[in-house]
Image 1 (cartoon, rainbow, N blue to C red):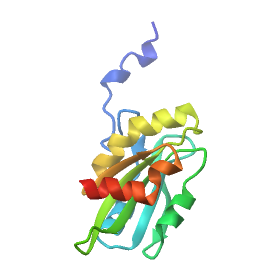
Image 2 (cartoon, rainbow, N blue to C red):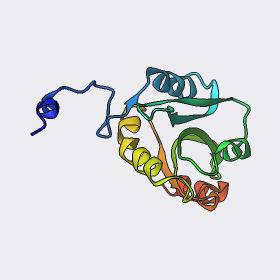
Image 3 (tube, one colour):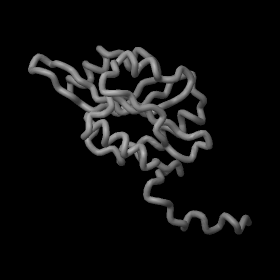
Length: 154
C-alpha cells in the first residue's frame, strides 16, 4: 500500500479551493467587485494559470468596451470564465445584469474542459450577485441576440 498518500483525504483544503483542487486567486474577486460595484470594467476574463492550480485574471476591459470586443477576446481553442456587465433595453429603459459566462469551445482540450467544468462552482460562489449564467461551446451560443433572449426571459 502507498502509505505516503494514505492520509491525504483527511487533510484540510484551503477555503478558496474547489472540488477540482484548483484555487481561486483573490484578484478574481477584486476584479469582479470593481466591475459590479465600481463599474470600472465592462467585462473581466478569468483563466486557469499555466500549471492549472489557480483561477486568475486574464484580462480586464474598460467600461467603454463593446460586446464585440468581449467576443473577440475569447480564445478559439481554450476555455475561459467571463463576467460581463450586460446592458439591455427591454422596453422599460436600460437595465443591467451581470453575466457569468463559461466559454468551453468544442475545440478545447478535454482536460481543460473538465477542469473548467469542475472548478466553475468554486468560482461562481465567490462572485456574489451574478444575474445569469451562459454556457457556450461556440460563437452562436454567445451571440448578442441569443444572450439577450436568455437574459430578458429571466
